[in-house]
Image (cartoon, rainbow, N blue to C red):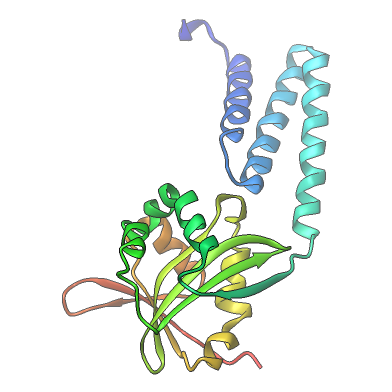
Length: 222
């Protein structure tokens, strides 16, 4: 079967596959980029074989994706942080709703939180608000006067474009300093989280037991 497929047909299959994969993306940004790539390839395929309806339809889809990507990248997002208590009902609902996704990055966190393993006065619970929508959750535990261990730093799938993390760890560092926090410590259990922390300015530190801890020094931005 595959022996009879020529190069031009492979271009069509490639475009179709990329478009199909794009529709599985939870991130709007990733969906737009992949859909743009797939539609442009499939449009090229349409022009090559002389299928004008296919070519022009996918050219239109390509232009639509370009339009919305420009709109996304040029839009100004408004962020703020909202302090909440660990007993907050919405926090419990948030953890229940996203528990499956949260456990991919922070195994057992939701169960431990429900079982009151984080009952202490040094816990900081923050909702990250983006354009009036809840974009993520940050929970840190103060381990001494100037150090905080990050129990969870989670962005919902629709907002995983690093803007939320940039706000917390770069634009809003003074918020930690106001609480006396000069060092943030995290434990990346999976590769994706490790890569994310490095992009947010965390550096690796090799502990005596061979374990790698992620460290970020908090700087005054004033």
